[in-house]
Image 1 (spheres, rainbow, N blue to C red):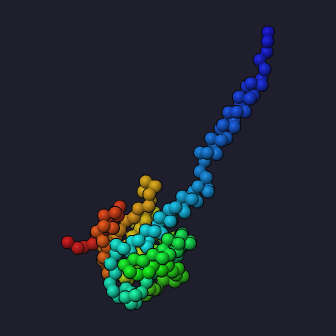
Image 2 (image 1 turned 30 degrees about the vertical axis):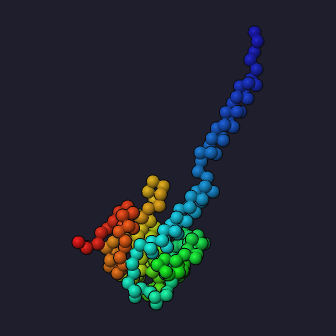
Image 3 (image 1 turned 60 degrees about the vertical axis):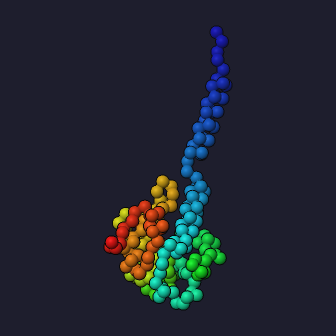
Length: 194
């Protein structure tokens, strides 16, 4: 009686082990890929941030002069880094140069036309309260329903950057948002207008 050699069995198991390890590596989320997805997400949000200005009308008093730049400010946690500066560099909206500033403290008259507020819920709520009713388009990035959000709040739906708009909050701040932008909003909190 001839005995079967264990070598083919060992070789087959070894091959299957390598395939299984490779499959695990391919299927596990890769931190580098996650970082790239975050970078892409914030590159898209950075572009939206200054492009919103093309669809918003501010009262003349929101600017120091007719030649003043359109100032996009970031307060609290800054998820953009240099991405926002790069996206806005050389851009003009309604004949105004787009300028990016980072704020340590928020004041009602900070000179911002657009203010992105990052950070934890309590921090966002405090900063948003400081500018509520002023002529500033506030933008947040809060996944928390019912949380402290700006006039525009970024959300992710179906792996795409989308946003909600509080038209009533915009009206209370003296801002008028174009119907073109309003149509793109996922959820719209309408103003009290007829």
